[in-house]
Image (cartoon, rainbow, N blue to C red; front, side, top):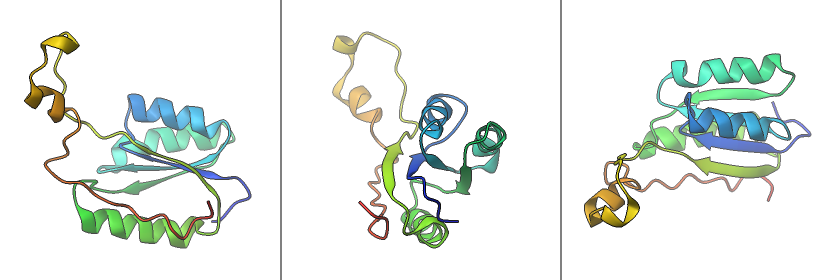
Length: 128
């Protein structure tokens, strides 16, 4: 599946920010969308491909290191050797609707917390 176009990977692809980011990157790059449920990425994959872009989706649980490793292994197999232009990590954190300066430390940290996990996806087989 390697193409002459560089790839962008969007983790946390869904109907909101992830879809918007994927659409924007698809104007220039092929995109790989990662989400837990196919229903989250399938509509945007279909939309991008119908518009003449190149998009693929992968079911991935970003909070599960073995799921991320399996997905990156699949990505390496599918698009390895292609240039990797960007990797976007857009996971759903805790959303608190109040002014920034009124956030507690826990509320602020919750926006970046993924069930206490930090996952390292290895993209070393892509060209840099």
